[in-house]
Length: 566
Image (cartoon, rainbow, N blue to C red; front, side, top):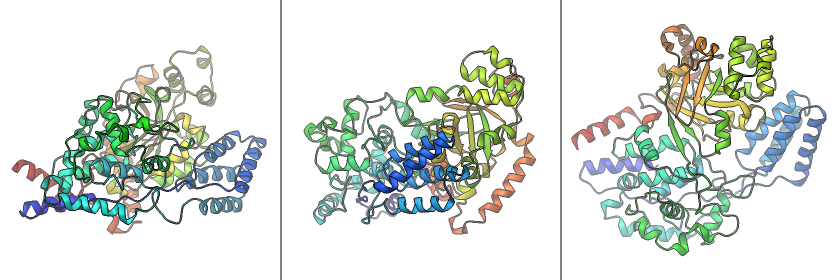
């Protein structure tokens, strides 16, 4: 909606007509559901049965899932655990369906709204608000807005609708730095990066992932949002604090950014009818310190840096990774590590395999790595040589040692999910199956040309360009390849296997498209066939890539021509 309004605004201005003005009223935030006591007791008893049968990992993951608030995304987490429990004979498929049904009916409130998860839905709220397009009366609500609240927003709209500075495209462009920094400080969804880029393009300006990254890295943005789905600090609780008048939603985030010496566009206009400077000048109304119990917005950062980083590598041009959910000790587990590629051509194939309780055995069978490679993975990822590892003769024993010592690293590649291949649908499912599997999550990084919110324990790397369908390097990777994860240096590189076997971390110089052309052709044929399973009206054709907002090419061409004209 925002992109359409911004584009219309640009078009009307080109015709010397009145600009487009708009104010948004986001949906209210839903309270998380409650698992009935009898169902919770049954599921805890199921966890006990898992332990008796020697399935401690499933028991652990079920108890962890029960700690989260019940919401629309919970079904995938429970589905993953239940599916594994069926495979191991702990429950029947009929019991699984019964559990899922009983969880579903207790999840959502009949009034509708956006769930309390800090995912794409609420990130959209945060971004549109940070762009100045939401009246503070309507930003964070726990009930549908009253007529009085809507009236306040409408009055403010009519008060400014003769001023071009308050038009939709003007607000987007003047508030883009605020939006990037709010998104970073609140740990927003990685999906929103391409939407942010597209908004500026539709507003008439040339903007891409490099421009975003320039703003992102101009000054490190701290983590100012202590959000938790297991400790009662979700978006519903934040909305309650706003409704109680203790804090001011996005105004509080911008105020605390400024207090932490982060530059903000104070003089940018907002649909409140005045600038951010005026909105956040009253410390008694906007300070995060006004919330004494269970604060979510913080005045003192919990981490020095947060947000979405832009990556590059020797087999792709750009990708993004969400580091806001990764504390330093977690980042250390994956940064500067060698990871074994496990390749899937699409999300369905990945999901089916990620739910396989014998996945690690399957990975061993498919990798075909040499004994020397297994030894070097252990040496590199553990940080030193181990003579006892070198004495192991069996490759299977070496692979098991990597698991036992928790130094195995896996890069799950999911290709064929980009905009042209399959419309770039939300890929929450494989990510949640990794995150709610205590074994997999210790080892796994997820890399895809698709999109997802980005909350995966071992880093979720998405929006890889060029996508597989455009013959990007991700098309040609295969199970058993080795990647060098360099997250802090913002790189992921394909390694030279021969050099690696000799203990050297050397980036591969291979021309993947040339050396694996037949492999790529076969995969492209299968992707083309799969593409036909979605309606043609949902195909994304003649568009820019994820680094350029996935907008119709003609929209990008207009911006280029407009900029040249300027």
